[in-house]
Image (cartoon, rainbow, N blue to C red; front, side):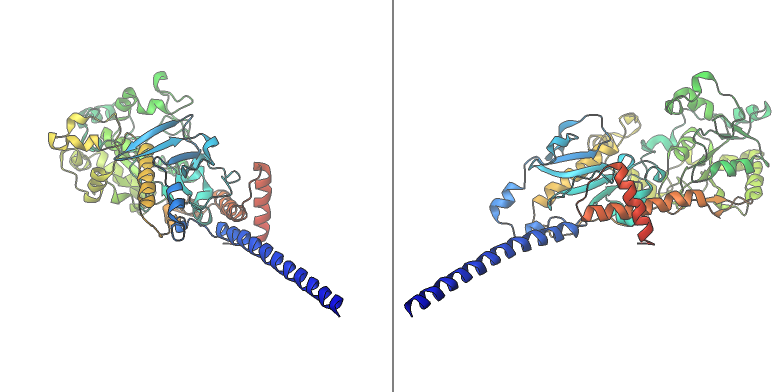
Length: 480
């Protein structure tokens, strides 16, 4: 009887021990899987860690000088302490600092973005920030919402982004009133009588998503165009102004004087998207040559006045446009109306507000053209959009660390997304579906979907394996 009781007691103790061990293992597994679920659903919802962390943990994750690490770097080499107002951050592209406890932000540059090589697994307190100032055609993946959901902050050409750089190609506020290179109309007319065409076209990036070359070829049927680039070339340029491996000659004073001779300049972007405006529009405005634009659909929101440029989409067809250019070319009074912004205060209040309130300005701008009352206007400015965005992120990190933020920071489709490219019809309307460019745009959609799946599963792979994975997603995903 005693032996049976002792045996039952031993069995009971062993059973209890097994139950405890199972409970410990179950708790451990639950923590791991719940942590994995948190990583999978992070989608930019950072800083919720402030809800339940104790004071010692908060002190540990709030460095005095947070590190902002460029993962896909625009720099060759950078590692410096940046003063941003009364805050400081360390800006670097040293990937060895990836796991440093002070690393708070990972920055990604759009044109060098590698979706197969993200810094995964992502820690809950890490911010991810995107910057891209170049053409949407350089990163189709970013035109699709799944790719943007992994970022907390963005800086792009879109006005809706966290740090808008829509007017990056208008670096100096005085450019619109600058007359340094402007040629008197009497001299322009004299050059016209000597055989200079009324319109300048200069492009060496041919066959682009905007289909601009196709439009220029059609316009040439109705009005003379001098084309100096490799695209639709019909004129030879002086050797010192010819294109080489870079675009430096376009910012040369000799080129400015050369281009300012023309009454009109074709200003056609390589991609058409709201808020995407480049130097192709701003340069002729500075030089006093009327831009004939094919640019952002909302381009008029940024023009100095309602009569400072010609927008091709405002005309019934391409022949109607050509007739209007002929009219201006032969009527000095009407033509001068398009240059009146040079002598008047800035009419566009929206444009003026952006120029006055942005926190960066090019060091090349002429500060002497501003009144003494605006002397601090320059001292408070960053020398570039990159340093401006870095300080924006630096201050944002300190702001978040300085309070118990429970807000979600997540990029939206409007921060970048651009529509699929089209092509011109025979009347000059940008309305025809383009199978070739649409295929590339759609491929970017599948790249974005594949990347998001990898992100949620904490997968990092080779470039070759990534594109195999994209093909797999293409076979299994119709849309997102």
